[in-house]
Structures are given as structure tokens and as C-alpha cells.
Length: 378
Image (cartoon, rainbow, N blue to C red; front, side, top):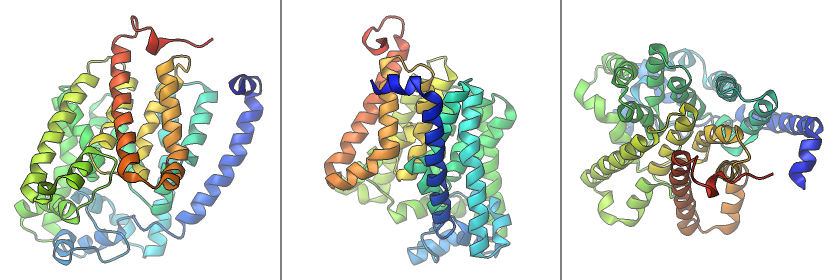
């Protein structure tokens, strides 16, 4: 009934969404202008002053400024040099502008590359700029949009340049790692090497400017991340750390990391057996949400699955994907607050997300024979 009404009044419905989205986006920008606390400006300032912020923060046990704890790869602080030329108030506004560019560029690039209709492109763009993960990214000055943009390049442009630039996504270990792992799982060893160049270049520049021991400095970002004990309750790594006492020991954490990488690698091999690049990208991007700690802003990685599902909304599995992603984008935070029982709520969502990935793989593999998951609504 509702869907039929929307189909009949598509233009009017779209105009209404545009008006609502504009007001929502303006409200988000107003918050971003006075917040931006996650933008890693101060650690970058320290670096360009010749100070090893990793070593400093490891000793102090925390960062010096707001919530900028500097647990990102060396390369990020090298790239942030232009922002260090400005004071904090100006730098965070400039970073907000960069994030605004990414928030429009990502959906437009995905939709154009995979030939979604103009109507669906506008609708997906409106969803992306108004969903809670995107608004949170702009508000907090997060690096998630930056990372996602470079993560998706090798899926959209299969060339050496995109392979090289995808290495910029590794500045955030908890999400960017999947690009490197996926290159290995898909046997694209040439692109794996190309993507590694920016990371190693950032490391060399960092230890040279800070006069740090190269070998020690190479592992300091990971050491800082593990020392901080960054965990949530909606991923496998965090749940193990929460409920298994030995996980607090450093060597046990490293063992857990190794096991998780192996499991993730096997899952990526399964995903890469499919031929549809768009389909592969949508599932590869979900892997970081399953295996490693993430906050609400990282759920922007669900957006490719939403776009892929919009290609054929008649199939049941795609409708389930759409409902699931929209739930995360708009209702997850509200329901989570109302229930206020994360010990059960978050693991259930994680299990559903894992089940969704497996179901999508199975559905695609058997798309010509599996009736239930390709049931069409008329």
C-alpha cells in the first residue's frame, strides 16, 4: 500500500525528501563547525614539530588534546601537513569541507559506476548525507569517509593508480586492513604491493622527521592501539576481549588478531568466488564491522550493500538488505538507547550481520536455483 503510493507520487516524495535532507544536513554542518574533536590535528602538529606522538602517548597513556589519541598509521599524519599550518579552529573547518566533498563524491561515484538510475542515485545520496553514521562522521571530524573513499577505488577503477591510492585507506587499521587482505584473497598481488607503497613511505617519512628507531616506530601505532584497549561490543575481537580474561595479555591479543585475520581471509576467498564486482565490494566492506572494533560512524561501510540491493528491489534478499541497512542508518541508535541492554543487543546484531553476509553469498551462488531468496514480489 505504502510502496504503491510512493511509486505513484515519486517526484513529490523525492522533493519532500530533498527538503528534509537539506535541513538535516545544515543542522549536521552547524554541529561540525563547533566540534570535530576526532580530527587528528594535534598528533600531526606534534609530528611535524619532530615529536614522536606515538611514544609520547604510550608513555602518558593518553593524548594531549580532546579525543585525538593518534592511534592511526604514520601516513595520516604526513598527509595532514597542510592542516597543521592553521590553528585548530580553522583546521577543523577545512577538514569539514574535505568531508563534505567525500560525502557527496562517494554515493555519486558508486551510483554512476554501477549505472543506477537518476532517481535511485538521488535517493541514495539523500540517504547517505542524512544517515546517522555520516552525520556523526561530519560532527566528530572522523576519518571514516576519507578511508571509505580510498577503499572503494580498486573496485570501481581496476588500474594501477587506484591500486596505489587504495593504500591510503590503511591509515585506519580497523577498517583499511580489509583492502590489503582482499588483494591477497583475490590473488591481486601486484595491487597489494602497489597499495603497500604509501604506507611504507609514510613510515619512512615519520621516523626520519622524528629521529625515531625505524623498527620500534613501525610497531608503535599498533602498540598504542592495543595499549588504549579500544573495544566495543558489536564485533568478534571486542567480544573475545570482554568475556575472556586471558585476552587482556598482549601476546594473547596478538594470537586473537592472527586467528581473526585467518577467518576473515577465508571469508574473503568465499566472497571473491563471485564475479559481480559490485556484489563483492558490498560484502568486503562489511568484514571490518564483523571482526574489529568500530563506532557508529563506521557503519557507512554498509552503504555499498544498500546501493547493490537497490539494483533489484524485487528480490527478497535485497529487500532484507535494504531494511537492515536502513535500520542501522536511522533506528539502531534509538532502539539501542531504549533497550539499554548492550550485553545482549549488540551480539544479536552482530550475529544477524554475519548471517546476512553468509545468506548473500549463498543466495548469489545459487541465484538460478534458490527459490526462496530470489522470490519476487509482484
